[in-house]
Length: 498
Ligand SMILES: [Fe+2]
Image (cartoon, rainbow, N blue to C red; front, top):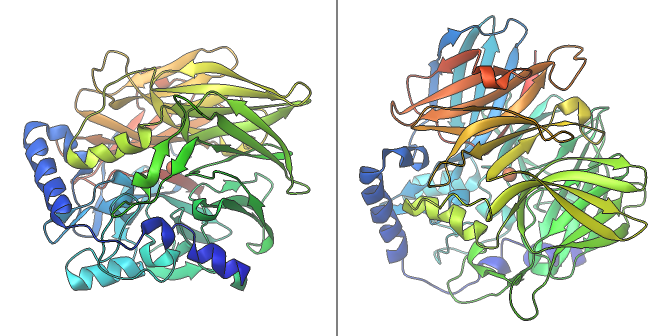
């Protein structure tokens, strides 16, 4: 019975409340965005997508012969239905994409994940359910998966591909056709439990993941074997649990950062809107760093850092009795600010609000230290072969310091030891999405491979796959593969070599 209690009081049911709110707000969001888009063509990156896509890209430059495989990506595609528009970027329905790179040619396929939510709402011609950042009182929510948007990551693992959304189950899709296969239940008592969009794949096989249950101050940990079967899971108590989007894994530890929000329920509030910042003023709370031992799944230590919001991590490694990891730290308004994109709002470019840092946790002294790495940036990634072990190279996309607004237009490969940054800024009107590191076969270093990503050319309204030599990012892309259309802006993706 306890498991059912977790489910019933997790993200899906209580977090989204039962009270009503007029639909007018959604119509206004629609009108505001379209008025802003007429003034600022760059906002096309956050416009609605209405249909599946398939096409061949036009390749320019030199596409490396040894870059052969599929780049799986995912992000929200549908934001609008029946004249209404979601309030938050994180709300849109998942649009899975596969970029096939083979013998210098690039083809693209993009398809909406056929979640129950997407199917029901398509049939109805209107949004039926509340989403992460948009409250709607239209229909009862039976479980977390009633509102599962499957919109955050697309992860190939053990011969299967999963579309992930942090508030509910993984959704399996076909690796070739992207047909939706269905929800993944790792064990019957874990049905519909949150499974985060940021699992960590061990280079030796197997996968770690977690699910946040902010409504019940708990967090569930999953350990999945190289055979794709659940090895173990455990529920951990986390007082004052709030949104936890990602985690980071070293050889011996799982590390979670719990930002200081109070979850304040209220009539007509979405889950995002319930997050009230508690990091300033009287009674301010810190950012908690919860370190869990991998071998026991017990909390080893809790450290404290100055109050910040966190979305994403780079990598962690154990350095004697110190654990070091990379993270991007934001101010407490970041969650709401990201949502503002849906109304066409552009945030100021302010390195005090957001910066990448390396954190060092000293178990002997109980102290945590912050060393700044880079200004306003996001989407940190490392080479897959160094996950959980010592790394020196961190890929990030950033906003050039001269930008008045927060525009992710620069890709970086940062040496976290020396601080040296190998970077490239795209032309005006381009937006860089997440870029990932892809090793060459038998790679001998963290720069022996490619920095692979996607950018939006908002001037020509086209989406472009980008390939850099990881050893010479500042030389500019060695190849570009341009689609004849615009594909939805993704959050995350992963490369599966042929
Ligand atoms: Fe993410």
